[in-house]
Length: 615
Image 1 (tube, rainbow, N blue to C red):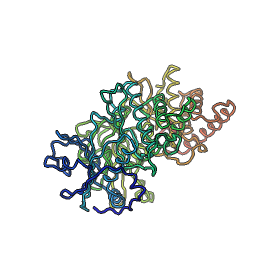
Image 2: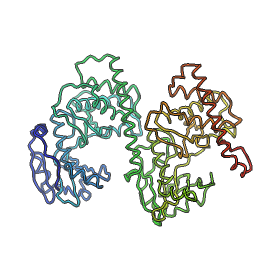
Image 3: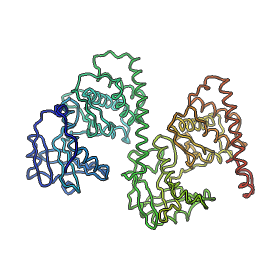
Image 4: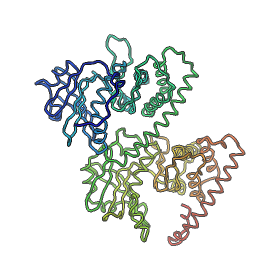
């Protein structure tokens, strides 16, 4: 393997510790290992490092398209081996233009250990000189009884508050030592933190935290220090990245505890007042929001790429499908996210795409769209789903739409953008496209069906609204929160009418009404500041409900007041300004309802009624 990376400067070479290494070649692999480890790694009892799948001592513990991680146990050693093989052109270019990823991580681990950062001890690294099939191997020592911090947070049996507090203390101290060592971890999340029980001779319940996966880091040219400035931009941004990945599983008081332990680690001799800690915690939450949005955007892009979470498959006869495979952390709101499927199982279930529209309960049929509810069997699992078929318009619009992304794939992407930002929508299962040559002809979108539910318009029209004052206020508050969160997360919804909000009835285990957004054609992302944008969602919702007799004026006022408070608008604390805003929005809602009624009147006359003209 030839690498065309730039020569390392003397300053950077001086950062490496003085651990003696030995370079050797075995078969097709060029190895570099620490002294005193070559006899155990390459002896007659050593495994075949390039073929660990057929070794009984090796256990596969993690895999993805880029790397496989094994644990090798024997009487002589207990090691972890990470095999890296580029799977795309982008990975190959990184390999050739930089260096072997195993070499990068091996040297970074050495530097981190020299700066007293708690990391795994590296043992050896290797790379293959074969140009067609490059392979990199990193061998590290195993930490006994270690477990991932991510597994602790996301386990089914939620640990006690004291266990979480001890783990947060250990993680804060480890990250503090990492930052004092002048190291910026670009992929710092709970999955890259390991926790191990303290030694028996230490009378303490706080575990020992280790930082792993140091392949993508930035190292300061200076050595480590005993203290550091916690208000430094790159340190607080790096800590915010970690907090963004775990704050869904810890309370606000635990987040503050984590921040307090961190700043006392990086500056142990400074007397931190409660006001100073609160000021730092506010800045940390600000950076956590920024990092959470970056993580959500990367997951949005991942939804359109082939990964272990979704895959694009060719069904034949011009049909292509992007299907859901698994979810790393299933969400309790979506039962469908708990399932795991394979590509072959999906290919068998979608072998005849035209049959998806045959049996089922028709929800909507007209124009270019047909929506039905039915059951779909995948690998013996029967899922209640909603199937939406979209055909292209006739005439010249058909040729323009045939070059665009299909409506099903746009629904798939927008559903993931909502779910990644904790906004509810039915779980996306598959998006099918049919091409004739290079031209798109039709598409099918499949998502999970919400049981015991109806849209908001039917709930109001059939007079199924809550009777008690408390329950009615609770439903209004949930609608206001959903619309406010939609705006705060940077979305515009031009078609947020009552029929596009699905309401799930409360159950014995949940007294709240669950709301879901459907029909995401009018959903758009706004990358600019939304402070000057119109409040389209709440105005469109009010316009679609104006002619429903079961709603009172107090219901509209209650929704308006809660929506204004959630957004913290300036009018929330001024009664006269709030009244002027109410009149302005009411005028817009009336104008919107009049335009919709005028546009839908010909269609309603053909159906024989005028009760749906404002829907």
